[in-house]
Length: 491
Image 1 (cartoon, rainbow, N blue to C red):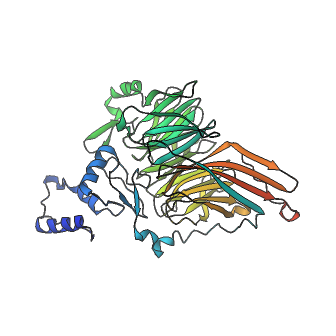
Image 2 (tube, rainbow, N blue to C red):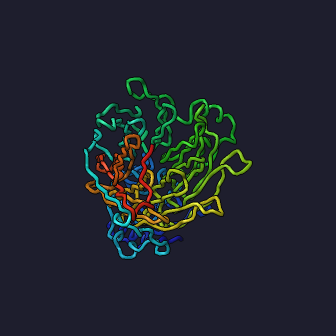
Image 3 (cartoon, rainbow, N blue to C red):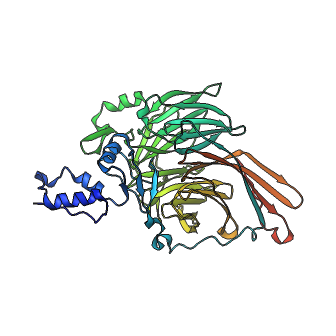
C-alpha cells in the first residue's frame, strides 16, 4: 500500500484531500506509475495555487492554457507540469492576488550578495526631471494589456486575443484585428519586419499579418506554414515527444509563444513556455533551428545588434546564444545565474554592452560584458519595486521598469556604472505588464545652459488601461558638471 502525505494547507480543499487519502490509501499500478501523480503534484505546488475552484482550474488550464479563477502569485520561481499545457509563470494571463508572504522581511532582503548600484541622485547628476500624464487608452472590449509595441508611429496593444492599433500622435484608434478562431488565446508578443507584423499567441502559433494601404491588417499565414508541415510530416524523424503519449513536429511550439525578436534581416527567433528557442527564416517563414534552451518556461527574449540572443526563464537563468566560430547553427555561449526566482523581463542598452534583467525577486540586475570574455557578468542590482518586475525597456541611457506593484520607475545611468532612480510613475490600479516608448517622437532642445530631452512612454496594465506619459529630462550645464554627457534619445 502507498500512503500519500500532503503539505500542511489551511484551505478546505486541502484538508479534504488530506483526510480522504489518510482513510483511503492508494495502491500503485504496475510499473510504479500513478494516474493521479500529476493531479497530486499540482495540488501540492506552492508556486501557483488556485483559490477559487481547484478542480475546475486544473481542467481549464489543460484545455485553454489559463485557469478561470484567480491564482496566488508567490515570490518564487515558476514551473511547468509535464501534463499541462501552461507554465505557472508570472506572465500567465490570470488575475493576481498576492499573499502576505510576498511582503515578509525575508523576501524583502532579496539577493543580499549583489551590491546596489543606486549611488546617485538627480542632484549629483545635475538633472531636472519632470513627467506628465497625457491620456489613457482603453481597448474595447476591456481586457488585460499583455504587450505593447510601437512601429512607425503606430502603437500595437495586445489585449486578450485582439490587437488594437493607435496613432501615437493623435491617439486615434486606427484598426482592431484578431484571429477568427477564439481558441487562439491571448496575444503574447508583437514583432515587425519589412512591412509585416508577427504576433505570438497562446495557442502555440505565430501569425503573420500584412499592413494594407488604408492601415488595415490582413492575415497572411500562420507559422509553421502548411507547406513546412507537409514537408516535415513525411519522415518519422521529424517528430519529437513533447509530453507523455504526445508527439509533435520539431518545427512546432507546443505551448504559449511568449516572445518574438528579429535577429537580423533574414532570421527571427521565438521563445515559448515549452522551454524551446526556435529560429525562423523571414524569406520563406520556415523553422530552421529548434533548441531546448531552458529547464522551465521561457518568459523573455532580446537580441543584440550583433545577433546575440538572450533568453530569460522561470528556471531563474538567463542564457546567451550565438553562432560560435565556424558553426552554422546557434549554440550556448554562457549561462547567467544570480536571480533567486523566475526571470520575467530583459532589456539591452543601445550598443548591447549592458543587459538588464527583472524577476520575481523584485530586483533588476545589471550585467556588463567583461573585457576578457565574450559574456556578461553581474555588476549590481537596482532595488525599489516592492513586487515582481514584469517589464523593462531601455531608451538611450534611461531604463524604464514596470512592476506588479503598479508603478513604473525611471532609472538613469551615470558615470562608472552607477544609477539613479529619477522618478516613479504611478496611477495604475493593477500590475504594469508592458512598456514601450515612441523613440521616433523623442525631442531634444538645447539652450545655453540647459539640454532637455523628451520621450513619450506607454504603460499597459492588467486593468485593461494604457497610460501615456511625457517624460522630460533636463541636463543643467555648469562648469562643475561639464564632464557629464548629454542625454541623447535616438531612434
